[in-house]
Every structure is written in C-alpha cells, then in structure tokens.
Length: 408
Image (cartoon, rainbow, N blue to C red; front, side, top):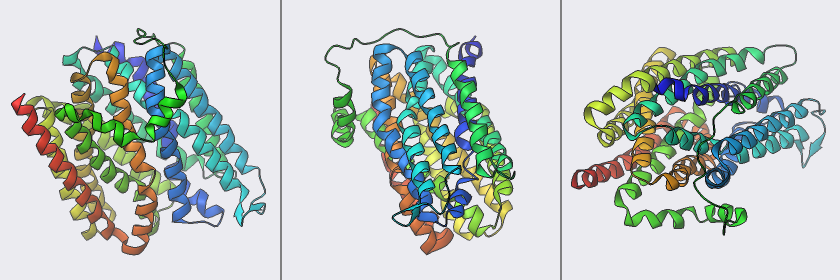
C-alpha cells in the first residue's frame, strides 16, 4: 500500500515543516526586537536559501553514494545544531554590538547558514520518495507529501506565534523547534534505506559544491534534452514568482494589515489548510484529467490572475480568497514539475535533477527576498505585479514544454 510505504517520510516531512514554519510569523518581530527592519529580515531569509542552494545537489549526490537514510540523518542533525545556535542569541546582551549591529543578529545569521547547508535534505527526501514508488504512483505520492507539507504548514505558524508570546519571547519558539527537530531525527533512524546508486570513485565534495557556482553552465547541458531544459526553465521563473510572493507575506500582514504574531500565525494556518486540500485532493485529480504539463500551465495562469488581483485588495477576507487561487497555482506547479522530472530521468540522475529543481528555488530565495523587501517598502502591495510578470515568463516556458511533450 502506497500510504504505508510513504508514512515514515510523510511523518518526517510533517515534523520538519512544522520546525521551519514556526519562524514565519515570528521572524519580523525578532528583527524588530534588535532595532532592524525589512532589509535584515530579507537577509536572514536569503542567507538560509543561499547555502541551501549550494548544498542541495551535493547532498543529493552523496545520498547516491552513501544512501538516502545516512544523509537525511546527518542533515537533520545539522538542523538541530542550528536551532541551538539560534537559542544562544537570546542570552546575549542586545547592547553588545559589532559594527553597530547587535551581536545576536550575527549569531542568528550563523544559525541560518548552518540550517541552510543541511536544509538541502529536501532533494534527498524527494529522491527517497522516487526510489520507493512506481512511475504510475509518483503523482499521487508527491501529492501526499505535498498534503503533509500543508498539514505541517498549517500547524507550524500558529505554534510558532503562540510559543513566542510567553515572557521568554522568541526563545519559546526556538525551544519548541529544538524539540520538534529532535523528534524528526529519531524518526529517521526508523527509516528503511534504499539501494546505493553510485560508488565514490572520482567523487569530490569540493568539486560538487564548486560546480553549483556554475549552476547555469551545468544547467545548459540539459539543452540536449529540451523537455527537461524548458521544464526547469519554467520552474526557475515560477520559483522566482513564488519566492517574491512568500518572502513578503509576513511583512504585508504585519505592516499593511496590522496583524500581530498570533494573527499572522492564524492566517498561515488557513493557508496551510489550502495546501492540504489542493495538494492532497484537488491537484492530483486535475493532473490525472488534463495531464502534468497542462496542469503546470493552468497553475501559471492562475498565479498571474491572482497576483494581478492582489493590488486591489485592502481587507483580509478578499486576500484569503485570492490566496486560495494562488495556492492552487503553486500546488499544480510543485506537484507536476517533480512528477515529470522523475518520470523523464534515470534513477541515478533523479537526485541530481531534483537537486536542480530545489536549487532553482534556493538561488531565487538567496536574492529575491532582499529585492522584494525593498520593493514592498517603495510600492506597497503594487509589488505583486512584479510577481505576475515572473509567472508570465514561467508560462512561456511551460507552453514550450507542452509543445515538446506533444511531439514526443
């Protein structure tokens, strides 16, 4: 039974999602506590993603050599360490400064670097799912993982927001994250490992990480495989639009809607419930009916419509309605891109290709939060038009992918 096979990794995904989503409603207020604003907020988000971008393909490659389970355990241990580093920032006097900035911010930055390096385990987890499923099961499998992500995303922000309201502030959230990360690490030891796909002959970790700096050069080798090339191109611009949207939502809710951490947590809980409905039930049915590539295109059209509507929204209820529309677009893209990638590549290549998939999300997240934060400060909610433009470019490559898939 598919659910039984996937249950351990679904449980891990659920626990991990809660762990990282705890910070979503809290981080703007953490930055504010140390007298800083949107630029620092964007920097902390970008730092995590930059190091995730560098590490993800290397972790994927190492998982081919040493096994998925070992790499998942090592990376989860790194995430746990990052939370202990984050916690230490709380105990430093805020008046202790380096170049005019509180030392605590630098400690938090270090924790984001540590978590980013080990956060590439997403590609390893996706490869594990691919290892244990048949081609006809993958759409449903990734849908179940997506629904689990949504479930974790529903509970994480509200747990984070409420845990930050005690007299110890954000330390309460970090302690909760430590407990959750510990549970995730224990769960990994119960995971069944999959087959080793490669040997370590001629493998260099340094060269693999260095090659990520030439990610676009390496990406262009897929030009001889037009379906993969255009699909990944579409994913790059979708990831840019997605990151631009998600990186400013907490700031939007705090500054434009005047919500506090608890209220932001509740909003993200609602958005998390959208993910459960869409990824677990709606998007797999749409995909089965119209096909994976057509579903991606439909998702991109819905994103463009949603982003163009957001500048006209000035109350919370219409925002949530449009968020649901955007959420369907996001779900259709995330679910079907992975399905096509794993069904179009050899098993030994899947971790690397999925690493590219995750890297494109990470590389956009390494600079777009900074741009989005600055743009939000200048243009308020009109900044969502920029997201629509990026989704429009993704749609172009999606249409090219559809044309190629029909020829094949």
